[in-house]
Image (cartoon, rainbow, N blue to C red; front, side, top):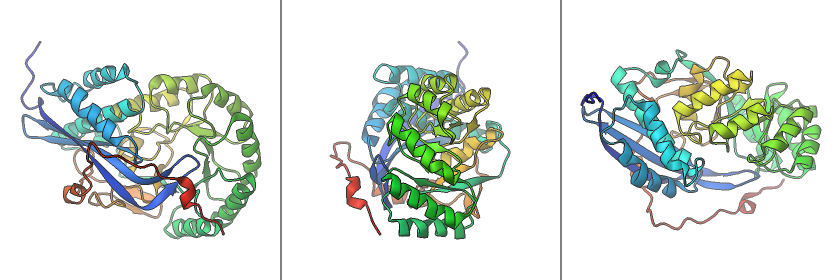
Length: 386
């Protein structure tokens, strides 16, 4: 075996987790979310170059992700070449496979994958999006919010705020009673006119109910119906996709290439939505996007704004990137502004690497105790009515 150059050899790895409060709670048909937990992975090469990656959870299991990353996966990378990214990815993924290849394991792998890409981008003096095949300096976005708890009046006000800010595409949550959902969709449609509108049920319905709901929603011409049923149930989605008058979108809660293959091979989805962090990072996201391209599907990166803007330019025809209200690192006050969002367009950073600069002083007060007991938020607490 040839000797690994000191310039590329991994010398040290640090893993830390931070529990950051949201300025406003997020409430969907599935969860109430009051915090995000960010797991930061810092890789230092013998040359002194540092790569910083991350994964994130919606306030749940971040401590577990960090423990897996620090105790079991990090030691596998020390002494290895930063350029062996496929071998390194496969090695840590295989070690994660036995306890479970998706969920917590995929999030742990993602932090390392992003850190490795960040280091390679800094060595090359280029943004990572250029390294993976994207030259764009600007991308379209769509305005999104986790807002099922808002009253219809407040939902309309929020939508109008997004429209006044120059947004041209919108996504809202559904999953209240059918009558309430129809009234809320109609009210939003009145505000935005014929601009694109997406609906997201966060896995709320059973198969028969999902079809009934979609048939009712169809009059408002939504771009897609996102996560109508449990993401584990590919066979029911295949049936639904053949009968639904609205295209089906999903991928947020799907982690492995094999799970995605089940959906693609069975024609169970129309808009494929892999989340960079939940699939194990940039390296795997690109493979899943190409898988979708092979089936002539739309690729729509889910959430994870700072990571999604890196991969989207590399996929021709990629759907605009999701910008969730209050979800960016800048919105949470833990990163410096390196990209600009204006009039439904994000101007991308030209910094070498991933283009994210964390505010470590701001993060310091949110460092998470690995022995902390984290309470579960009750969605019912936040619901509003007119």
